[in-house]
Length: 164
Image (cartoon, rainbow, N blue to C red; front, side, top):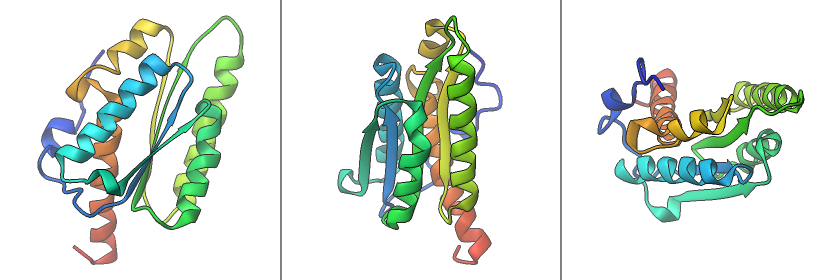
């Protein structure tokens, strides 16, 4: 797995999660992978000052349910960012294509309509080995990377609003 181009190392320690309320929504399907992605996201947020009380981890059945849940999290108005995590592994049927496409389109629509960052941390891999390579430790964990992207986007929003 390539981490070439990943901004994680450049942003470590430069973003601050203190006082931020973040919803981390993780699919339960492919739990070996999504549990690791969730741990990575929560680790990134904690490393950057987030308190457990400000983090809400929400589990949903699978990637298909991520867009609806993300939309509800945004509508709740309680969060500064929403991070979505899932893992869809290609199988023998076209089901993979349908789930990936609708999850991506759904989360994209939620993100475009939201006033807060909604980050896509859904793995779409050909096999379990590819998923495992993306759910490792540190910058090899795409959950960690997604949480870091959320923190950076909160900062970007502040700049755009003139709050920074």
